[in-house]
Length: 275
Figure (cartoon, helix red, strand yellow):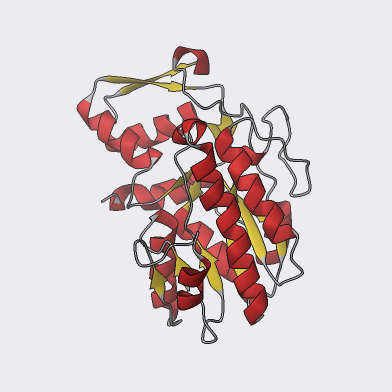
Protein backbone atom coordinates (compact mmCIF):
# COMPACT_ATOMS: atom_id res chain seq x y z
CA UNK A 1 0.00 0.00 0.00
CA UNK A 2 1.56 3.29 -1.14
CA UNK A 3 0.04 6.30 0.61
CA UNK A 4 0.43 9.56 -1.31
CA UNK A 5 1.03 7.56 -4.47
CA UNK A 6 0.54 10.58 -6.74
CA UNK A 7 3.31 12.64 -5.12
CA UNK A 8 6.94 12.85 -6.13
CA UNK A 9 8.17 9.94 -3.99
CA UNK A 10 4.93 7.98 -4.24
CA UNK A 11 5.17 8.05 -8.03
CA UNK A 12 8.74 6.74 -7.82
CA UNK A 13 7.53 3.91 -5.58
CA UNK A 14 4.69 2.95 -7.92
CA UNK A 15 7.03 2.89 -10.92
CA UNK A 16 9.57 0.78 -9.02
CA UNK A 17 7.00 -1.75 -7.80
CA UNK A 18 5.57 -2.10 -11.30
CA UNK A 19 9.09 -2.61 -12.66
CA UNK A 20 9.72 -5.30 -10.04
CA UNK A 21 6.38 -7.01 -10.61
CA UNK A 22 5.27 -6.39 -7.02
CA UNK A 23 1.50 -5.84 -6.63
CA UNK A 24 0.79 -2.39 -5.19
CA UNK A 25 -2.31 -0.45 -4.26
CA UNK A 26 -2.05 3.34 -4.65
CA UNK A 27 -3.88 5.48 -2.09
CA UNK A 28 -4.39 9.18 -2.70
CA UNK A 29 -6.56 12.08 -1.60
CA UNK A 30 -9.48 12.60 -1.43
CA UNK A 31 -10.29 8.88 -1.18
CA UNK A 32 -7.69 8.47 1.56
CA UNK A 33 -7.57 10.75 4.60
CA UNK A 34 -4.59 9.71 6.73
CA UNK A 35 -5.89 11.82 9.62
CA UNK A 36 -9.02 9.63 9.82
CA UNK A 37 -8.68 6.17 11.45
CA UNK A 38 -11.71 4.83 9.56
CA UNK A 39 -10.24 5.92 6.23
CA UNK A 40 -6.93 4.26 7.08
CA UNK A 41 -8.71 1.04 8.07
CA UNK A 42 -10.53 0.93 4.72
CA UNK A 43 -7.26 1.06 2.80
CA UNK A 44 -4.91 -0.82 5.12
CA UNK A 45 -6.49 -4.25 5.60
CA UNK A 46 -5.55 -7.88 6.16
CA UNK A 47 -4.37 -8.20 2.55
CA UNK A 48 -1.79 -5.43 3.02
CA UNK A 49 1.81 -6.67 3.29
CA UNK A 50 3.44 -3.29 4.03
CA UNK A 51 2.52 0.39 4.17
CA UNK A 52 4.71 2.96 2.43
CA UNK A 53 3.83 6.40 3.77
CA UNK A 54 4.71 9.01 1.17
CA UNK A 55 1.86 11.29 2.28
CA UNK A 56 3.00 14.44 4.07
CA UNK A 57 2.59 18.17 4.54
CA UNK A 58 5.70 19.41 2.73
CA UNK A 59 5.25 23.20 2.50
CA UNK A 60 8.18 24.26 4.68
CA UNK A 61 7.32 27.96 4.64
CA UNK A 62 3.57 27.33 4.90
CA UNK A 63 4.12 25.29 8.05
CA UNK A 64 5.25 28.42 9.88
CA UNK A 65 1.70 29.78 9.61
CA UNK A 66 -0.07 26.41 9.69
CA UNK A 67 1.94 24.40 12.19
CA UNK A 68 -1.16 22.74 13.65
CA UNK A 69 -2.12 21.38 10.24
CA UNK A 70 1.45 20.28 9.50
CA UNK A 71 1.60 18.47 12.84
CA UNK A 72 -1.77 16.83 12.25
CA UNK A 73 -0.55 15.35 8.95
CA UNK A 74 3.14 14.78 9.69
CA UNK A 75 2.74 13.82 13.33
CA UNK A 76 -0.70 12.81 14.59
CA UNK A 77 -1.63 10.88 11.44
CA UNK A 78 1.54 8.83 11.78
CA UNK A 79 0.34 7.61 15.17
CA UNK A 80 -2.81 6.31 13.46
CA UNK A 81 -0.77 4.54 10.79
CA UNK A 82 1.52 2.96 13.37
CA UNK A 83 -1.48 1.75 15.38
CA UNK A 84 -3.09 0.17 12.33
CA UNK A 85 0.13 -1.48 11.16
CA UNK A 86 0.79 -2.79 14.67
CA UNK A 87 -2.74 -4.19 14.79
CA UNK A 88 -2.12 -6.09 11.55
CA UNK A 89 1.50 -6.97 12.31
CA UNK A 90 2.87 -5.35 9.15
CA UNK A 91 5.78 -2.96 8.57
CA UNK A 92 5.40 0.77 8.02
CA UNK A 93 7.96 2.68 5.96
CA UNK A 94 7.78 6.32 7.03
CA UNK A 95 9.80 9.28 5.75
CA UNK A 96 11.28 12.14 7.70
CA UNK A 97 13.66 14.98 6.99
CA UNK A 98 17.08 16.50 7.56
CA UNK A 99 15.19 19.46 9.01
CA UNK A 100 14.77 17.66 12.35
CA UNK A 101 18.38 18.69 13.07
CA UNK A 102 19.59 22.12 14.19
CA UNK A 103 21.97 22.76 11.30
CA UNK A 104 24.81 23.79 13.60
CA UNK A 105 26.98 20.73 12.95
CA UNK A 106 30.08 20.45 10.81
CA UNK A 107 30.02 16.69 10.19
CA UNK A 108 27.24 14.46 8.81
CA UNK A 109 24.46 13.81 11.32
CA UNK A 110 24.27 10.14 12.41
CA UNK A 111 20.84 8.58 12.83
CA UNK A 112 21.04 8.74 16.63
CA UNK A 113 22.05 12.40 16.85
CA UNK A 114 19.70 14.43 19.08
CA UNK A 115 17.04 16.27 17.10
CA UNK A 116 16.45 20.01 17.50
CA UNK A 117 14.40 21.44 14.60
CA UNK A 118 14.75 25.10 13.70
CA UNK A 119 11.37 25.41 11.95
CA UNK A 120 7.75 24.27 12.24
CA UNK A 121 8.05 21.72 9.46
CA UNK A 122 10.94 20.02 11.24
CA UNK A 123 9.01 20.02 14.51
CA UNK A 124 6.01 18.40 12.83
CA UNK A 125 8.17 15.66 11.33
CA UNK A 126 9.84 15.02 14.68
CA UNK A 127 6.41 14.29 16.18
CA UNK A 128 5.87 11.62 13.52
CA UNK A 129 9.29 10.12 14.21
CA UNK A 130 8.46 9.82 17.90
CA UNK A 131 5.25 7.91 17.20
CA UNK A 132 7.10 5.35 15.07
CA UNK A 133 9.93 5.05 17.59
CA UNK A 134 7.42 4.32 20.37
CA UNK A 135 6.24 1.17 18.57
CA UNK A 136 7.85 -2.24 18.81
CA UNK A 137 6.72 -3.01 15.27
CA UNK A 138 9.07 -3.75 12.32
CA UNK A 139 8.92 -0.18 11.08
CA UNK A 140 11.38 1.99 9.16
CA UNK A 141 11.93 5.72 9.51
CA UNK A 142 14.01 7.01 6.62
CA UNK A 143 15.21 10.59 6.79
CA UNK A 144 15.95 12.21 3.46
CA UNK A 145 16.81 15.63 2.05
CA UNK A 146 16.62 17.84 -1.04
CA UNK A 147 14.30 15.44 -2.85
CA UNK A 148 13.70 15.70 -6.59
CA UNK A 149 12.47 13.66 -9.56
CA UNK A 150 11.80 14.04 -13.29
CA UNK A 151 8.17 14.78 -12.30
CA UNK A 152 6.42 16.93 -9.72
CA UNK A 153 7.39 20.29 -8.29
CA UNK A 154 11.01 20.40 -7.13
CA UNK A 155 14.23 22.41 -7.12
CA UNK A 156 15.75 20.68 -10.13
CA UNK A 157 12.78 21.37 -12.39
CA UNK A 158 12.50 24.95 -11.13
CA UNK A 159 16.16 25.79 -11.75
CA UNK A 160 16.13 24.07 -15.15
CA UNK A 161 13.13 26.18 -16.14
CA UNK A 162 14.59 29.47 -14.91
CA UNK A 163 17.96 28.74 -16.52
CA UNK A 164 16.23 28.66 -19.90
CA UNK A 165 14.19 31.80 -19.17
CA UNK A 166 16.78 34.08 -17.55
CA UNK A 167 20.31 35.27 -18.20
CA UNK A 168 21.37 34.87 -14.58
CA UNK A 169 20.32 33.33 -11.26
CA UNK A 170 21.37 33.88 -7.64
CA UNK A 171 21.24 30.87 -5.33
CA UNK A 172 22.17 30.53 -1.66
CA UNK A 173 25.63 29.17 -0.99
CA UNK A 174 25.50 28.94 2.82
CA UNK A 175 23.22 25.91 3.18
CA UNK A 176 24.84 22.50 2.72
CA UNK A 177 23.15 19.12 2.36
CA UNK A 178 22.69 16.03 0.20
CA UNK A 179 20.44 16.00 -2.91
CA UNK A 180 18.27 12.90 -3.27
CA UNK A 181 16.73 11.33 -6.35
CA UNK A 182 13.25 10.06 -5.48
CA UNK A 183 13.87 7.07 -7.72
CA UNK A 184 17.03 6.15 -5.82
CA UNK A 185 15.32 6.73 -2.48
CA UNK A 186 12.52 4.33 -3.42
CA UNK A 187 15.06 1.68 -4.43
CA UNK A 188 17.06 2.15 -1.23
CA UNK A 189 13.87 1.96 0.83
CA UNK A 190 12.72 -1.23 -0.86
CA UNK A 191 16.13 -2.82 -0.28
CA UNK A 192 15.92 -1.97 3.43
CA UNK A 193 12.37 -3.32 3.62
CA UNK A 194 13.18 -6.55 1.78
CA UNK A 195 16.29 -6.96 3.92
CA UNK A 196 14.14 -7.04 7.04
CA UNK A 197 15.63 -3.87 8.50
CA UNK A 198 13.82 -1.66 10.98
CA UNK A 199 14.57 1.50 12.93
CA UNK A 200 16.06 4.77 11.72
CA UNK A 201 18.06 5.15 8.52
CA UNK A 202 19.20 8.04 6.33
CA UNK A 203 18.41 7.80 2.62
CA UNK A 204 20.03 10.30 0.26
CA UNK A 205 22.42 10.22 -2.65
CA UNK A 206 26.15 10.26 -1.98
CA UNK A 207 28.28 13.36 -1.66
CA UNK A 208 27.26 16.82 -0.50
CA UNK A 209 26.93 20.34 -1.87
CA UNK A 210 25.33 23.72 -1.36
CA UNK A 211 22.16 24.82 -3.12
CA UNK A 212 24.41 27.01 -5.31
CA UNK A 213 26.54 23.99 -6.31
CA UNK A 214 23.38 22.04 -7.04
CA UNK A 215 21.84 24.84 -9.11
CA UNK A 216 25.02 25.38 -11.09
CA UNK A 217 25.11 21.70 -12.09
CA UNK A 218 21.47 21.87 -13.17
CA UNK A 219 21.87 25.09 -15.15
CA UNK A 220 24.95 23.82 -16.96
CA UNK A 221 22.75 21.13 -18.47
CA UNK A 222 19.63 23.23 -19.05
CA UNK A 223 21.36 26.27 -20.56
CA UNK A 224 25.10 26.81 -20.06
CA UNK A 225 24.72 30.48 -20.99
CA UNK A 226 22.80 31.19 -17.77
CA UNK A 227 25.17 32.59 -15.14
CA UNK A 228 24.55 31.18 -11.66
CA UNK A 229 25.97 33.30 -8.83
CA UNK A 230 26.21 32.53 -5.10
CA UNK A 231 24.43 34.57 -2.45
CA UNK A 232 23.63 34.36 1.27
CA UNK A 233 20.42 33.25 2.95
CA UNK A 234 20.09 36.77 4.35
CA UNK A 235 19.72 38.10 0.82
CA UNK A 236 16.67 35.88 0.29
CA UNK A 237 14.76 35.76 3.59
CA UNK A 238 12.09 33.05 3.88
CA UNK A 239 9.33 32.58 6.48
CA UNK A 240 10.97 29.35 7.69
CA UNK A 241 14.57 29.25 8.85
CA UNK A 242 16.66 26.61 7.08
CA UNK A 243 19.49 24.70 8.76
CA UNK A 244 22.89 25.84 7.50
CA UNK A 245 24.33 22.32 7.59
CA UNK A 246 22.03 19.32 7.24
CA UNK A 247 24.23 16.63 5.70
CA UNK A 248 22.92 13.23 6.78
CA UNK A 249 25.32 10.41 7.66
CA UNK A 250 24.44 7.55 5.30
CA UNK A 251 27.01 5.04 6.55
CA UNK A 252 24.41 2.87 8.34
CA UNK A 253 22.34 2.66 5.17
CA UNK A 254 25.34 1.86 2.99
CA UNK A 255 26.36 -0.89 5.41
CA UNK A 256 22.90 -2.39 4.95
CA UNK A 257 22.32 -2.03 1.20
CA UNK A 258 25.65 -1.06 -0.36
CA UNK A 259 27.05 2.22 -1.73
CA UNK A 260 24.58 4.97 -2.59
CA UNK A 261 24.86 6.71 -5.95
CA UNK A 262 26.75 10.05 -5.95
CA UNK A 263 24.39 13.01 -6.33
CA UNK A 264 26.18 14.16 -9.49
CA UNK A 265 25.52 10.81 -11.20
CA UNK A 266 21.92 10.73 -9.99
CA UNK A 267 21.31 14.24 -11.32
CA UNK A 268 22.86 13.38 -14.69
CA UNK A 269 20.40 10.51 -15.08
CA UNK A 270 17.39 12.69 -14.27
CA UNK A 271 18.10 15.90 -16.21
CA UNK A 272 17.42 14.46 -19.70
CA UNK A 273 14.07 13.12 -18.47
CA UNK A 274 12.56 16.22 -16.88
CA UNK A 275 8.84 16.38 -17.61
